[in-house]
Length: 139
Image 1 (cartoon, rainbow, N blue to C red):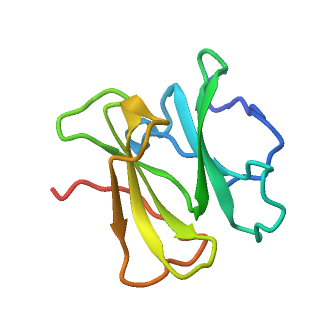
Image 2 (cartoon, rainbow, N blue to C red; image 1 turned 30 degrees about the vertical axis):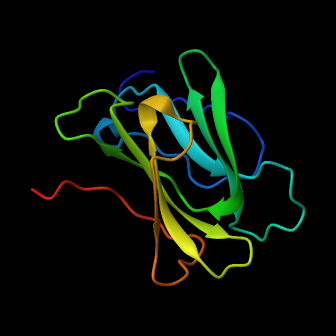
């Protein structure tokens, strides 16, 4: 695109949360977009409930998915300390069981996604659907 313009690409029509990139690349070229979306396997999901995480590779058009029995919020990328590459870090999101009684902070190594999460931290209370946030370094 020319300076002051942008390209809009519809990846698919499936209901999803906001797509996220490595925030350090905002306004710059990026390769990966990660999103929480509806898999189509559950008819009982409420608005704002997504049971699948998907990472799109905008260079190749391929995607990889992580299916779960939890519903997920928006996924955020947290770079590894000293990391510079788009997959050198972690994906973080809140996951809530279908009974809506318990929530976890769920963490994946971005380079090995969609493998099993590297950590699940149980939250002291249920986290509401639709919580948005960013990852910022402590310094």
